[in-house]
Length: 252
Image (tube, rainbow, N blue to C red; front, side, top):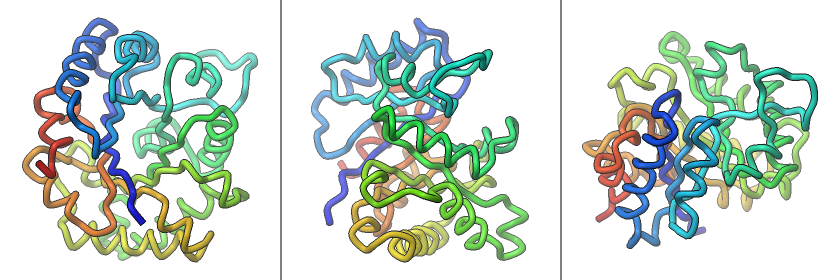
C-alpha cells in the first residue's frame, strides 16, 4: 500500500511568534513545488495560530506539540484539542519522550490524549521509544510493545485511521546520535508486525511509521530509504527552513 511520506518538524520551545511566522513562510515558499511528501511543522501554542494564518493556502500543515485530554474546565495552563483545532492545526504530537521525562506523561495519559485528539478531528502523532539503558538491557521491543498497546488501548480500527506512529529512540534525541539503518529497519519492521497483531494487516499497511532522533540533511536519504520508514519527526534541523528543506527533499 502506498503511504504518503510525512516529514514533520517539532519546533519545541523555540522561536517567538514573529520568528516562527518568518521561518514558516520561508519554508512554505521552498515547499511550493513539493507534492509527493506531506510537510508539517509544530510551533509553540502561542505561535500556532499566527503560523497557521500565515500558511493558509500553502502545502505546509500545522501541528501542536501537546494537548490536555479534557474538553474544558479549571485546568490552569492547559490547552484542549478543540482549542488546538480552532487555532488551525491538523496534527498533534502526543507522548514525546520529553513530555514523558519532564512532565510525568504516562501511557495512560497518552491514551486519553489520543482519544481527545481523534474526537476533535486532529491527527495524532504517537511518539514511542526506548532509553539507552533499556536498549543495552535488550528491552527495546518490550518497551515499545507496552507503549503501543497501552497508548492505543480500547481503540478500534476505524478510530485510528489517521494515526501516525513515530519511533524516537530517547538516546538519539538531541544527542547527535542516530540509530543505524539496521537498527531502524529492525524496529520499524517489528512495529509494522505489532500493529498487524493488535489490529489488522490493513491497519498495519495504512499506518505511517516515522523515525525521529537527530535526523539531518546528511542522513535523511539513508533513513527514508528504509522499507518501513514513512517519514521523519525532526527536531533541531527543522528550525532552519533551508536546512529542513534538504530533509524534505531527501528523494530529489
